[in-house]
Image (cartoon, rainbow, N blue to C red; front, side):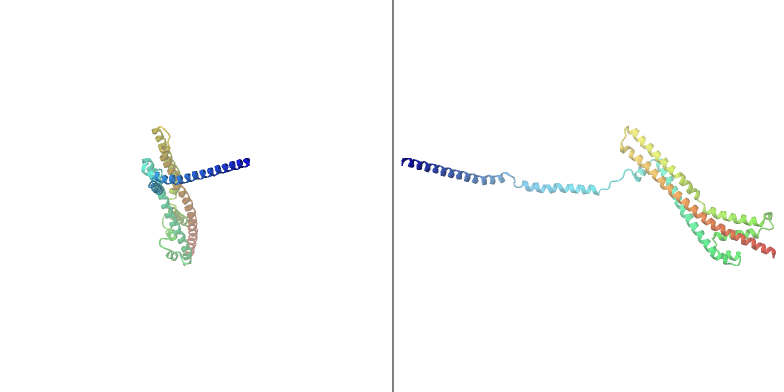
Length: 300
């Protein structure tokens, strides 16, 4: 009995101790939970409420100028300091003289080419008109009246008629009529071909000389670049870029002048050959008619 009572009393004491521990642990947890809101409430008090909005507002303000600056820098056009305008502004007397010579060559090339193209086209139209109207006439004099006053073919016929009609009674009597008319018609052909060939020698000269004129400008630009290096005492791109750019521009201009001159020269030579053939054939026909008509007159 005493042993049982002792066991019961010990068990009751143990349970009392466990209950006391549970109560104490619960009170401690409650105290910690109550302290947490106080600390959380204190944290906003330590932070400046206006600071965060100010920083947030300041970020777009700082970003806006950066975007504006980028846009402005993108819209600004960078001027080429080594182009044609810079060469003309900073070039010396020699460079500008070479440039003027090349410009004169180019202008002369285009002027002569356009003028000769119009002339050859006009002569070809006159050849078609002579082929259509002249040979339908009853005589050479009537055929001349059907030709335009400015037609080169009318000039050929008139020269042939003049040679055949004024052969007698002068020193030309010593020359055979056939040879005299042939020479007169040949001189007329040569005058026409000479007029159409005027300026072709200029085109040939430009095609041959213009590259070397541009090369002279190139050499002069390289010389200026070397002088700039010698004066500066060191090699830097800003010292040599300008003179070298000027040299390359001169080379390009020389080629741009020479190539059209060569092409136009070959074009005009080909067209002049076509025109010369038309004039020569017409002159041969006129020569045959003149001699046959003169022979018939003598027999009559």
